[in-house]
Image (cartoon, rainbow over all chains, first blue to last red; front, side, top):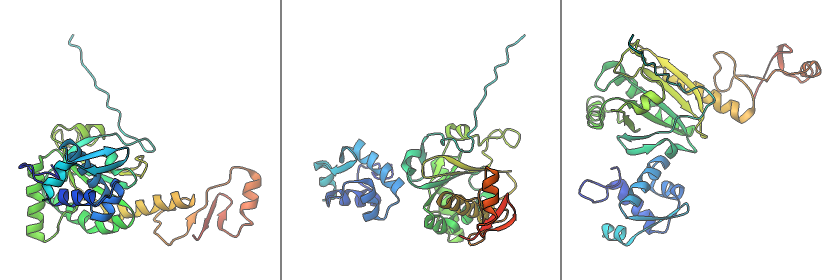
Amino acid sequence: MACISPDGKPTESGTKMLRALKSGLGSAGEIAQSTGLPLFRVRSGLRELLQAGLANQKNDKYEITDEGTKLLK
Amino acid sequence: MEEVKQQTISLPRLGEPAPAFEAVTTHGVLKLDDFKGSWLVLFSHPADFTPVCTTEFIAFAEIYPELQKRGVELLGLSVDSVSSHIAWVRNVEEKTGVKIPFPIIADLNKEVSLAYGMIHPGQSKTETVRCVFIIDDKQVIRTILYYPLTTGRNMDEILRIIDALQTTDANGVATPANWRPGDMVVVPPPNTQEGAEERLKKGYECVDWYLCKKKL
């Protein structure tokens, strides 16, 4: 997992993406631009965050879940 | 008489959609779709911790900034494990100071290698040969290069091909032999006699009606 470590904590890139989601950025492109991560990494990372229940998807936009917010604290 | 089963594998061809995949890589699980909107150089190497491949990885890392300027991502592949890939790229960085910035597919089950025709049994039944697939932003295969196990790839040529393809797409022209950015490009040949006659009046540099060049 590139965004979530085996211990369930977000990796450095996972944390960057969760922070971007928390600040209200919604699309994969916006997150890539704000985090400096390549778009392919963001798309793949968002799949991981969705599977882990740390983000939700509405059409082509994403938002952080309560569980995702807790992990940032 | 024992029945011989023959499996026909359809290899990707130029102008066709690149075969979709989902693969474990050193940057997590990646799908071909993840690269949509970017150009992609998908390349295979025979094995980690081998000398020619190491020189190639260093060379690919060196042209990575140039590729990024052209909107191109890089994705390596071999049939080694992720742990092997990670150990190798760490070793390359430790020994040479070169960080490998792009992901590498761990194609242990050979799913991607077979879909892209990267295993040539005449060269090796177990390793991928040195393939390069240049895939455009619409995920269409635009160039396929195969190099034998013993010959390292030429990075200048990969960049040159990308420059030529992107110039063709942007300007509707072709590029002559040994073309480099800034050189004259080839104007598409006319389809009619009238077009051929008009062509000669347009101020292009023409050898004859079918071979005209212009500056961009």
